[in-house]
Length: 314
Picture 1 (cartoon, rainbow, N blue to C red):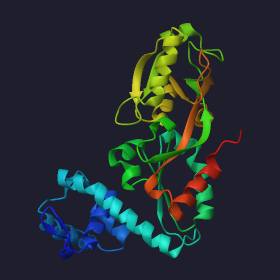
Picture 2 (tube, rainbow, N blue to C red; picture 1 turned 120 degrees about the vertical axis):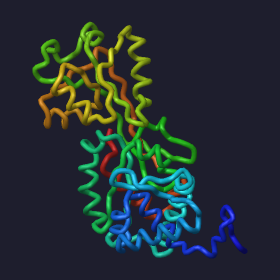
Picture 3 (cartoon, helix red, strand yellow; picture 1 turned 180 degrees about the horizontal axis):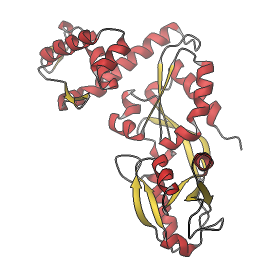
Picture 4 (tube, helix red, strand yellow; picture 1 turned 30 degrees about the vertical axis):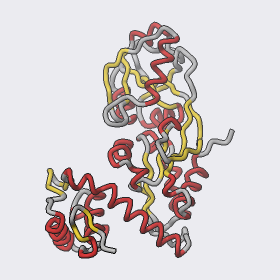
């Protein structure tokens, strides 16, 4: 049977060209793709030129020091990523999964505070159990932009169970509440618990973790403030927890962060923690993955590893 895509005869295309395009999209450059594929940069450029001729589209164009996809290429990206991932899974499934010799890249997505509190422990165990593999950590923005779990660009994500999308599974790892970070010599905040009056008059730092917008936690926080008759005046909005901690350490701004990561920030910066003027709700962090990788031996092994490191023993 002859397969055609938008009038193009698929059987007449060297499918290796799509592997090259996939590597370029993942790395953002021809140099990075060449390194990943163990070929020369000119070989990558020649492959892109051939695929451009076949599809009649530039596919990627230069922007600054990297390459960005055209709208047509953005349409193709999830299909290419899914095809590459499915082929890799099929090959690995036929051979059996051997952690000691696996050279696969496993990608985890999460907010940057996981990079402070969770990733170091995960990286240590990963290096022992998967010595030839690569652990890759990407941002929430990357996860959302690439539809990472669905396309296979991301193996697992760390987040609240409410963030689970269609076709995804979630396994609880731990629960955590929040505390406030303030600089050690803050002129107004002295005690171990912030009073309601100080909470209302302080300038707060807001976290916009995905696509420049407040997330699920912010919505829950807003409901609690309303219940307790509190207001929160935001003086700064940032996309990363570390940026919030840095700003709190060098200003009179107040930053709410998970208790799990607060100690690490206090160890690194001139900060201390104070309790909220209300019972801080506990939020569940879950391991999230897509059905498409549910039965894959390599993906299952990686998920088990993450659970072994991060699951909270009650």
